[in-house]
Length: 125
Image (cartoon, rainbow, N blue to C red):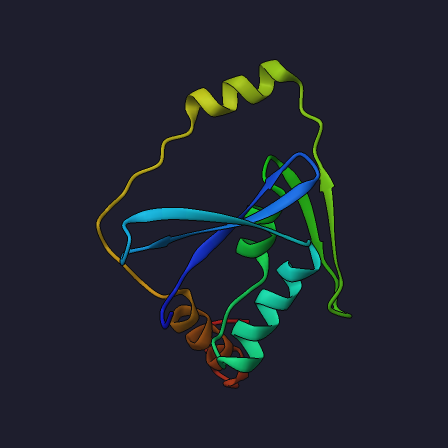
């Protein structure tokens, strides 16, 4: 299962981990607890030593439009945003998403950003 990747999808009050298996060419979903979102982050960050953030895991797990607060003590709070349906519809109608075909690993980008913040004259503050 090396290199297996998936997303966490929230449906009603349950979370599911969805991943594709090239071997059988189909997707599989399993239910996961919300605490698994934090566990997935820690495994990737501490266990695999990948420079990743938490935002992708939390956005996928909770779905919808949320205010996600990442506190300095490591805790995370997710508050659903209750947006007027007309405003949400206008937003959805005016957002464009493009696939450029370019691939990247976010951990490479975050590693560069973290290194840049450590340098006295680095471009990041």
